Image (cartoon, rainbow, N blue to C red):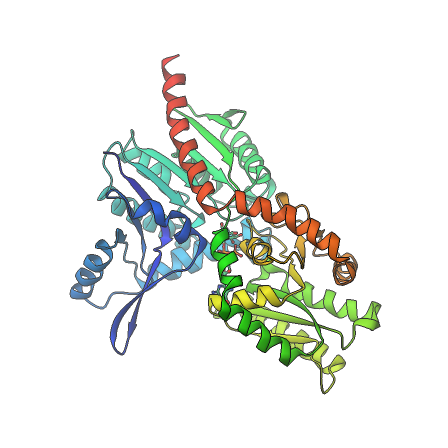
Length: 472
Ligand code: GDG
């Protein structure tokens, strides 16, 4: 029976070395949840890096067996590989370019060489698992070359690829010295999925301009095969967030926060530390709100959670410093003994506390400069069972295509941003309920399980379509 093999840079389990030996912690990410039902069935398997560097062969065997028992196959990477393939090409070349920050991109041939080598390593790991008729689903920007490598080795395999970050306009992509190889790598797939039609259009345009292939209605004709391209906006595990927000623990936490905050209205923002997230612009917009509408001084607080990330990289360290300084400046200027404008946390919270923050927040500020989708926006909406709450969402997050009942803003327009904050704080209850109801219905229906089903069904269809075209 054909099997399904999921491939991503990281496995859904993180292995760590502690004083008590190795620990195995499941990742709580959306992808792990959405694909959990697939990879644990019928001999299916998930291939990826377990997140630690090996010390010896005994450790390798132990981890491989332990993960194998839970349907996972580890790809072990060295520190040098992580440095050049992951921190280097993936996060310092592709990440800034695909998020429209080319000024932060580096173009190091050594990083590219490592990227090719590690994609090849993943290819060998997948081939060790996959038979000729198996279905392989590859995820994200760290593995753009893998589909073509797999295709060369397994011409009959069914191969899907999904990109979780934006696909940039052709003008951005063409800056990359390795743009042609990257596109050719992707075209090894039968189906290539993006979060939005916009990203899909950018990809088709790049394929036409750089490779000269004809494209019609999302079908690309390469000299040897046809490849289907489509949009699949990723969803969340809706019920899980509804339940987490309704749990006693979340209600109790909310009560504690509420008492500590007094009568202050609450605006919430949650992101990983990243220059794509628009964190500094958000702080400036909040400051502008206090300047333009002094009636909100001592009446509204911003709870800002920034999850530590990549802070050894100079750009991220500089961003951290900028945020620290902005928070310090705004708080020192406006705070009173009983009121803090900004409650800033540079750490992550357990899901139960996250749920209570979603409950507490009257306004959620999700204002990235660029974001493939942004699941926080959907999680906030799912958590608002009482119909109270306003989502302010950047028009440059993939989620804005679906969540059009949010207050959509351009994050570089600080005045518009501050005005949206004011509008959210004075929005009548009926309007909040109407907007939330429409968004909740959508987030409930297009959840992560339907996303997985839709992609897998379309992948099967793309294979049938290819056979039909080949025999016509
Ligand atoms: C990519 C794309 C795309 C955050 N802080 C805490 C915490 N989180 C959780 C949220 C949410 C997740 O992290 C962040 O999801 P995003 O969608 O914003 O971004 P990524 O998953 O990093 O990245 C993105 C996504 O892939 C899916 O395709 O949407 O555009 O960049 O689930 O809840 N979770 C806990 N504590 C925290 O402090 N427990």
